[in-house]
Image 1 (cartoon, helix red, strand yellow):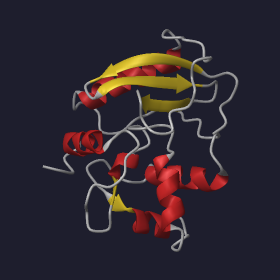
Image 2 (cartoon, rainbow, N blue to C red):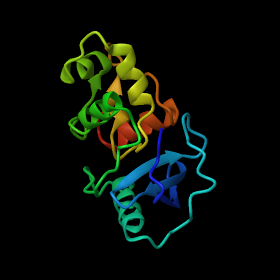
Image 3 (cartoon, rainbow, N blue to C red):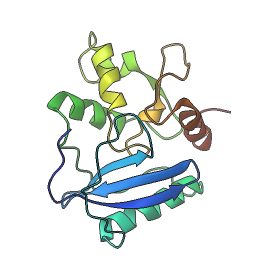
Length: 165
């Protein structure tokens, strides 16, 4: 993944663990749980907890985790991924809160029905966890499969949204 040189970060304490929220001049570029797979090296990114976009993103995450927000209203900077990854991440934004889809259905949605494995890999590399809802993608049989932040967190997010009991 490539990140714009204007990237800044702030720490966020979610009910599911500490997170890093990052933004560029174009939009939110990252939301990661500490220790999640594919977490980029962010050590050199300046800490800017007062950055207006980071403040807004953290406020919306607070509302989401409190059950007061079902959709995010934030500009996104997804330019760090390949064109294929960006198409998958855009398709994730079309999964409604409280809903789920399968990797196969997501492959169909982007017009690449034979690319299920590649779609799965792109979903796993989604840099904006929670906001770009990769947690809403499940196996064809409805089973919880793969989540870079851990299956326990995936289940918690889906329960929060009412997709799981």
